[in-house]
Length: 432
Image (tube, rainbow, N blue to C red; front, side, top):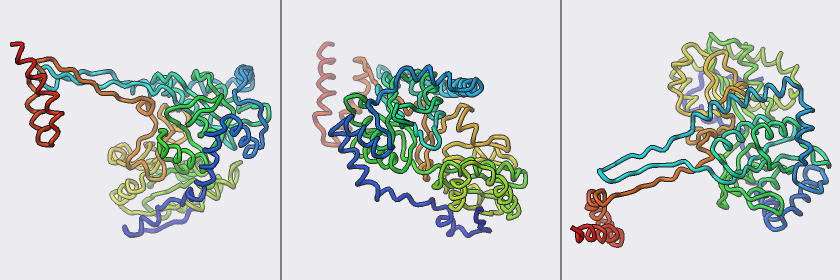
C-alpha cells in the first residue's frame, strides 16, 4: 500500500513528492520518425502505422456515417441520459467564460479594446484503448463549439478492421456537433492533424490526453510551431485529510486516480499516522474488487502518505507539489481552499469526489499535470480563442498622446517610430 512518511523535514519534501520520471527522451527519435513519414506520405503512412501499431487493417480513415445511428442504438438509455446531463452542466459552466468586448478610453480620444476570436481549426485526440474517454469529447468539444471554432477534427483509434470506434465516443461527438471523425490513433493521429493528409485536415491547435507516445508527439509538434493545449504527464491526485475525513472516502478517491494507469500518482497528506493507516486498510479492501486492480496496484507503488501536524505545513507542501487534482477532506475546507495557489482543480469537502469533476459537475477535466499547475490553467473557453487587441485614435487623441510616444521612441533611438507620430501631428497642425 502507500508508504507513510512521518513528519519529514522541509528539505526532504522535494525527494518525497518527486513524480515518477518520464523517459520521453528515449521515445523522441522513434516518434519523430513516425511524424516525418506521415508528413511526407500522408494517408499511406497513417494506414501503415495503424496496421503496425494497432494491428488494424483499414481501407479508409473517415468514420462511416452509419455508425452514428448504430452508436445511439448500442448505448443504454441511462448512459445516454447521463451523457446528456453532463453536457448541459459543462455547457452551463463554460458559457459563463464568454467575454464581452469592452472599449476603454485610456486618454481622451484614445480608445482600446480586446476581442476574443475563435481558433479556426482545432484537433481533438481521444484515447480509445482500455478506457475510451468519451467524457473528454464533451470536455473539449463543448468549449470548442461555444468558442465558435469552424473546423473541429476528432481522431480516435479504431477498434477493428471495419473502422469502428467505441459507440459512446461516437454518441458524445454527435451530441456536441462534431462531424469530422477519423479512425486513427497514436502518434500518427497527432502528426496527421499537425500537418494534414489527403483525408485529415491540418489544424492550428491540438488538444487531448494520450499515452507517452502521444505526449512525446505533442511535444515535438509544439517545437515545430503547432500549438497544443498544455504539457502533459501521468494523471495525479492529492488528498488532504484530517480527523473529519472518512478513510473509505479517501481510499476511494485515491483509487479512482490510481486506476488510470501504472504511471499515475496519488499523494495523501494527513495530520496523523492513524489516519494514513486507516486509509491504507481501506485501500486494501477496495483494491481487491477493482477490475483494473493490477494497474492501480502499480500506481500505488509510486504513491506516498505524508503526515504533517500543522495546517500551515500541509498547505505549503500542497502548493509546492502543485497537484492536477486536489481534494480537501478537512475541517474548514472552504477557508483553506482560498489559500491554495497551485492546483489544477480543487474539490472542497468530504462529498466532493474528483469523479464529479472528471465527468459531470461542469468544470473541465483537462488539467495541468507534473507540477505545471504552478504556471498553467486547465482547458477553458480561453484555450479555444485568440485575444486580439484594437486601438483607435481621433485627431485629438493623437495630439494628447503624441508627445509621450515621440519622447519614448527618441530615447530608444527609434526615430522612424517617432516620425510616424510627428508627421501626423504636423498634418493636424497644418489644418488649423
